[in-house]
Length: 139
Image 1: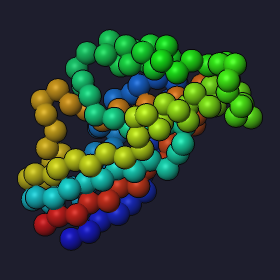
Image 2: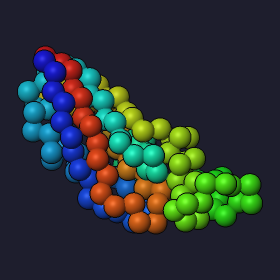
Image 3: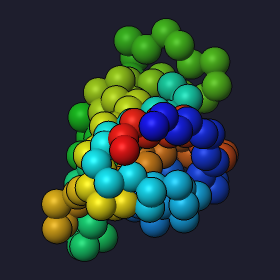
C-alpha cells in the first residue's frame, strides 16, 4: 500500500520545534500500517527536519544557539542577501540538517526511540506555514 499526502505545519517563530504530534494528528491512515516506512519531505529551502530529544526543551534551545554560532548572520562573505540577513544562513542551516526523514512504521505507529521526536527547524525570523509531503509504504 502506498499513501502520499501534503500536510501543513502552522507558522512558528525561529527555532527548533517538536512537531511529532502535529504531524501524527494529520495522518489517521498510519494506524492501518502494520509494517512499513514513512518519508517526510519538507518543500522549503529555509527550514529543515531532524530527529532528536523529545523531553527536555533546553535541547532545542541549545540547537538554536549552536547553529546561530556556527552559521552566523551578516557574514561579510555572503552574497545572497535578497530577503534579509537571516536568508542565506537559513539556506545553509537547511542544507546541513536536511529536508527529509525516513522513519520505520510498526503496528500503526512510528517506531521512534523512547526519547526521539521530529523537529521542525525554523531558520527564518518569519518563515510562515511549512508544507510537508508524507509518503508511506507498507502493509
